[in-house]
Length: 90
Image (cartoon, rainbow, N blue to C red):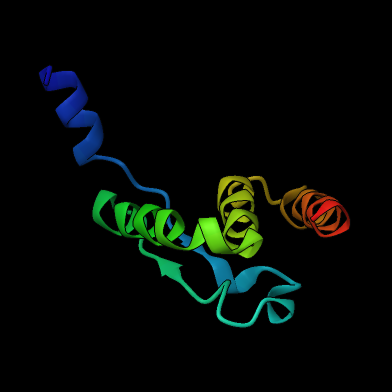
Protein backbone atom coordinates (compact mmCIF):
# COMPACT_ATOMS: atom_id res chain seq x y z
CA UNK A 1 0.00 0.00 0.00
CA UNK A 2 1.48 3.37 -0.97
CA UNK A 3 2.42 5.60 1.94
CA UNK A 4 -0.06 8.27 0.77
CA UNK A 5 -2.93 5.76 1.09
CA UNK A 6 -1.72 4.66 4.52
CA UNK A 7 -1.48 8.28 5.63
CA UNK A 8 -5.00 8.99 4.34
CA UNK A 9 -6.41 5.96 6.18
CA UNK A 10 -4.62 6.97 9.37
CA UNK A 11 -6.16 10.45 9.17
CA UNK A 12 -9.67 9.33 8.26
CA UNK A 13 -12.21 11.08 10.51
CA UNK A 14 -15.98 11.08 9.90
CA UNK A 15 -17.93 11.02 13.18
CA UNK A 16 -21.65 10.30 12.82
CA UNK A 17 -24.38 10.02 15.43
CA UNK A 18 -27.14 7.93 13.88
CA UNK A 19 -29.43 8.84 16.80
CA UNK A 20 -29.66 12.33 15.28
CA UNK A 21 -32.01 11.04 12.60
CA UNK A 22 -35.38 12.65 13.31
CA UNK A 23 -37.33 9.49 12.43
CA UNK A 24 -35.02 7.05 14.22
CA UNK A 25 -37.80 5.78 16.49
CA UNK A 26 -39.59 4.35 13.44
CA UNK A 27 -36.77 1.78 13.19
CA UNK A 28 -36.50 -0.22 16.43
CA UNK A 29 -32.99 -1.56 16.86
CA UNK A 30 -31.55 0.82 14.29
CA UNK A 31 -30.18 4.37 14.33
CA UNK A 32 -28.59 3.74 17.71
CA UNK A 33 -24.90 3.78 16.80
CA UNK A 34 -22.62 6.67 17.58
CA UNK A 35 -19.70 6.24 15.22
CA UNK A 36 -16.53 7.86 16.59
CA UNK A 37 -15.38 8.50 13.05
CA UNK A 38 -12.01 6.85 13.00
CA UNK A 39 -11.32 4.03 10.58
CA UNK A 40 -11.91 1.32 13.19
CA UNK A 41 -15.39 2.54 14.15
CA UNK A 42 -16.30 3.03 10.50
CA UNK A 43 -15.27 -0.54 9.70
CA UNK A 44 -17.46 -1.69 12.62
CA UNK A 45 -20.38 0.21 11.04
CA UNK A 46 -19.62 -1.37 7.65
CA UNK A 47 -19.62 -4.82 9.25
CA UNK A 48 -22.93 -4.05 10.97
CA UNK A 49 -24.40 -3.13 7.60
CA UNK A 50 -23.06 -6.22 5.85
CA UNK A 51 -24.49 -8.49 8.55
CA UNK A 52 -27.92 -6.83 8.79
CA UNK A 53 -28.61 -5.54 5.27
CA UNK A 54 -29.75 -8.83 3.71
CA UNK A 55 -32.61 -9.02 6.23
CA UNK A 56 -33.58 -5.35 6.67
CA UNK A 57 -33.97 -2.24 4.57
CA UNK A 58 -33.48 -0.20 7.76
CA UNK A 59 -29.75 -0.91 7.52
CA UNK A 60 -29.74 0.67 4.06
CA UNK A 61 -31.52 3.72 5.51
CA UNK A 62 -28.81 4.01 8.18
CA UNK A 63 -26.16 4.11 5.46
CA UNK A 64 -28.05 6.83 3.58
CA UNK A 65 -28.17 8.95 6.75
CA UNK A 66 -24.51 8.18 7.47
CA UNK A 67 -23.53 9.34 3.98
CA UNK A 68 -25.56 12.54 4.22
CA UNK A 69 -24.57 13.37 7.82
CA UNK A 70 -22.06 16.04 6.86
CA UNK A 71 -24.64 17.80 4.63
CA UNK A 72 -26.60 19.52 7.41
CA UNK A 73 -28.76 21.54 5.02
CA UNK A 74 -30.24 18.38 3.48
CA UNK A 75 -29.38 15.42 5.73
CA UNK A 76 -32.84 14.97 7.24
CA UNK A 77 -35.00 15.79 4.21
CA UNK A 78 -32.88 13.80 1.77
CA UNK A 79 -32.80 10.79 4.07
CA UNK A 80 -36.57 11.08 4.52
CA UNK A 81 -37.08 11.03 0.75
CA UNK A 82 -35.04 7.87 0.39
CA UNK A 83 -36.71 6.23 3.40
CA UNK A 84 -40.17 7.08 2.06
CA UNK A 85 -39.28 5.65 -1.36
CA UNK A 86 -37.84 2.45 0.11
CA UNK A 87 -40.88 1.96 2.35
CA UNK A 88 -43.25 2.54 -0.56
CA UNK A 89 -41.42 0.18 -2.89
CA UNK A 90 -40.44 -2.57 -0.44
